[in-house]
Length: 437
Length: 170
Image (tube, rainbow over all chains, first blue to last red; front, side):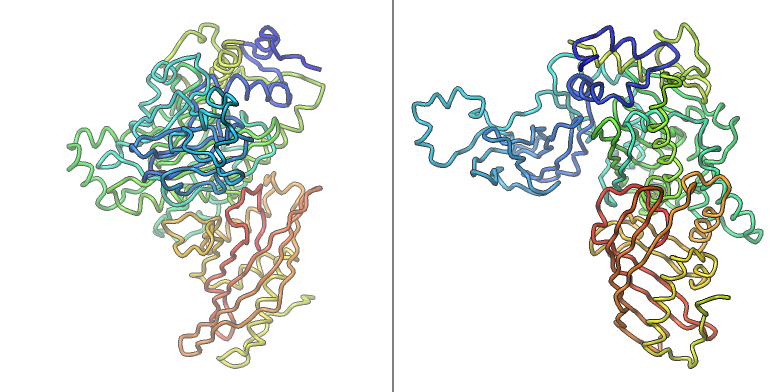
């Protein structure tokens, strides 16, 4: 039985001003509609161009649940292709990343394609003479995703032709990418250190919402961050604070800290926590780093770049970045109740190695399946995924600091514990779900 | 009464059997959730390392699943006892099946002994039971007449797979 397909009104009814219906998290039909409409109508993160530095290099990923391929074409540009042979549908690449050489070759029947997807050759070509093959869908090769944008190394793609152009979709939110990239003295990032992969038995949106949820750390993370604070108290006075304690302890900051740190709201579901300060603000200086920044940008500009303390920036629909520590998490939907998280880290080109060391330590202490902080979060998501099946209440409350005039506002900074960013994500969700439906 | 005693190494130089017994005992302490005794097997400057990449050589500029000094290990052990450790309500349990540890190198002059132990590790919580296959490499030395772990490296055969929570110690 379908309830929501083609029913714009029913989809709109799932999102109210201050609450959302549980079906946005638990309904497989809603999930399928997200894959058909919401993801293809949005600019979705594909990968970083440093993952494909040389012609023929490729990286396989997904937009929603559709397999796609980021590839460096022979002319040096980056292409995004649907990762499917136009013949029988075989996924073209056997590994997540690698080098195709001058062309892709399907492992099933040896159809081959240039690195922009166009058909290069097929075996036994004679058998297709007088069959009208030239007019077939297959003759055009591996279908490219037509709308691709490489923003300072970060590649986004939009599958559908309709919807917003890149600038309109992201607007001022790109300033968080700018700040993360400008932290390199040469304004360049490189994927480094490996990718952590973490499987969650919950809906992908729970992870996205959690990035701007500042009322949970001191509660959910009492077990991990709270224990760090308690164990650290027993260290002999004067002991140098280890990097690990600097990273984890701020999760136990009081509500007031998070209220004052602020949240900024942008259009289309984007936004960031940490307007004034963040849990990254008080990290120890890295020797030699500021001098390099000063030499590259001048003192005033260097201070301005490093003074930005953005905590989590959410890019709707499914990534977050941490500018101050150069980390990007990709929340990949698999099913209504299943999400793969890929946590990527970046090296600031021409900056001291210690910055990457700290980034990697943050990633493994906070975001890993073997991380105690991550355990706290996953436990809550999975409990929510189960609890939502209760018929006692079909609605999820997102009411904190609600204001009736907020819907039309953008680029405003509000109380850091507001649930406005989540309400804003759901306004965007409705917009891109129903766009063109 | 403790079923497993922390046997003194009779001589300054441990026998192969001393090394093997030590590795087997370490796994047993984890399985029995005797984490304070387990932690005491680690030297003060020890590391517990679980690489993220196959044949990983660098724990500093390549990410790991775990690369924990004794402070972080003791935080984990304390956390497991916490009243508000919700991901351990109910608690996880685990089980090791070890092959006989092989002594890969012994260097009494440097007080450094290395063993290699293929193993299966099972972690359970509620209705879920997950099997991991791994190789444990122990770097051991004798301190005050007792063997101590300087480095325990756990290489998972599927180190780069997407896992759910892994909550205890392999």
